[in-house]
Image (cartoon, rainbow over all chains, first blue to last red; front, side, top):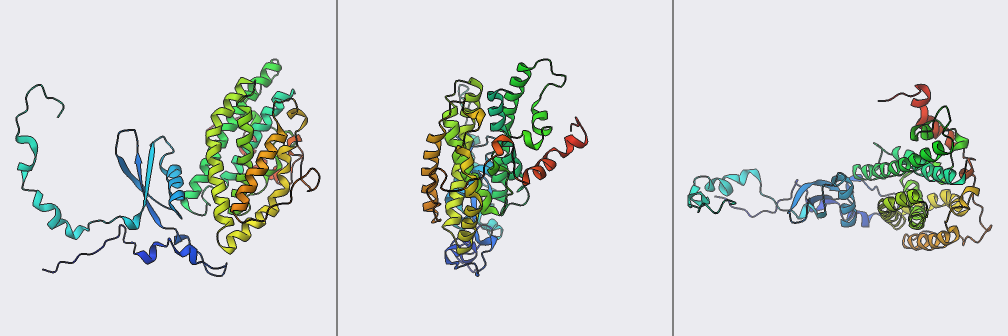
Length: 127
Length: 256
């Protein structure tokens, strides 16, 4: 069996195409600045105090500051949030669908891992 | 028309006309996210305009309760002519490129921020309340636009050149903000103080953006276009209103 450790980019964006540094290398108007130069960011929004940040979506921005502002404009216009996290998509490592067999299927026949076999006293009703 | 009505309309018109201009970017923004940002600002400004128009409406109808056609926020926005609008010339100018749009927004938001800070303590409760409510969104407009000015000014050679061009285009329209019209003089607004602070803040940002600082604006040393506050507008205003008012002019009273 051929096992490889590979780094996967979310959305398959290799480093050289994520574009974050290209803006700095741009010299003068002659070198084209493409719209795709802005890297992709993932946005996480906390909707209320005490809840977790949840993935809301992604957007393009030149840097973290702009990413947060864009996230504010794109994802919190209808009072969806009290806190925003952004992270450049290339820093998110993900599993790929062809690994799902070895990663997730082994858990399918191990129902003893669920806590449903414990008898709870009647007084405990919020579990 | 008393000066409170005129002043309220002036505040409303500034917001409405800039909102109309910014809304022209809808579907045309440089990237999707900024398209949403600029139209968001448009919507904020429409909200301010409505608040001021509603107040103007009640003032007008109160002072002239017998009029056959009482004023409404819609009639004030859609049925007044060019000469009746009291907005600054700055806000009616065409958008130009993105640099010009964000620089205009920066000049205006910085002014609006300082103005509303004073107005929120106005003796007129309604104006004070609208100013206090708007100041949060204006702070955001200011933050957003000043970051863009710095980003483009201190960006590539092309973005820098475009910002410089925008400066040349717009600077001569900034003086009008601090020249009180007749109806403003009775309002408790310290134009001189706002001007001083505006100058200081704007220069800070321009400096950070590595843009050429405009000559120090001692009175009269730099030519400034004025007139909008008293209804004397640029050639662009009529075209803007034609687009803004077309539906109500062509189909009076239409609703959808």
